[in-house]
Length: 514
Image (cartoon, rainbow, N blue to C red; front, side, top):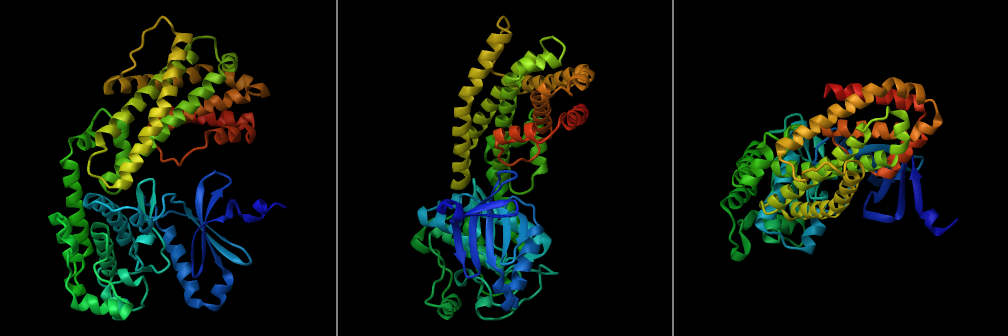
């Protein structure tokens, strides 16, 4: 067996390479892994069960972390996927955040105040959900704030705790990281859920001033400095009234005088509204009545406006790429599809219309990113937007070539306007849906008669994909990154024609209701 094979481990449906260790703590290691069924990249936290046998506290903490993680489905909180136990180890499977943590990020570059505010918006957005579910984190620090394509996610709930009354319950245990600990925890005094407000205050201060507000040789020295030295805004750096006001209220030693969670949320909601209202392009993105399918997506999402915007742009990119993949498959199976359908030009029309829509939406995505990239958001979001922009600009060249070739091959005599207004694009989308419904409805009986012939399986897959892309576009369902070839292989190799045909019939009916 090669050394490479020895380092690759499999647990359940997940694989990981022991060489891909993302981090190591006192209780185990975290690896980058993969769900071999879906090809999704995941994070795998491995812990030795022997530790639990002799450490009841640790066992309780792990059980608590799992129960807390299961509770959340929020863009700014790391998503729990699975739990696997073997004879020797326990594995917690979570979503993978490929861009590291805030600690690493701060070591590489200095943030501007606006960038720090944008990151804080997302952290506070995550805490809205924690507060709603009655969870206190107690170990918030830059290393526990992860980044995935510009989306900030709160992680590591090993010291988190449920509380029945989020505004007043007092706790005593000393947990967390000293530099970010509230003074009450350092003093071993009772403390409330406001300890997390202190922690986010220290983190915000560090992002703005590139240093923590208080230091010490050890916990006692740190505590002494917090108690005797007033909060100072270092370096005579000019900061906004918002930043000064929040830090002053969040970093008050006495808990009874420290700002409450409701006040924190109100402050950041006011700041966020100011960012959006001062940017007419953002207002257009959220309010354009012609983009009804965008509005549906935005209404489904929760959280601050900047996170919603980035999630929407990422999903729009994914949707365009998926539709192009489906169109290529449909085009490649055209000759075989003609044997299944009555001989007319509807198949060719579907290909050309979809290619035209893909080109139109790619133009729209480029326009939206270019118009919103200077809207004051943090560097994580801005960098992710530029990555999306570069991807879609590169892919758009292929979209243009494919549309031009299909138009010349099938409808050379017809002149098409490449640029579409919002209204024209929506009308074309509606007519495309109608055409798909009619095409399959008119030929459904023939499909049922011919489908039993094994030579048509690839065509049935192409038909189902055509329905998939249109239903997905209409619903704007949330999807993870797709491996298109793997999707195609799975559809072709694991299903018999009867099941595929049943799904085609059900999806055809579903599309008529949208």
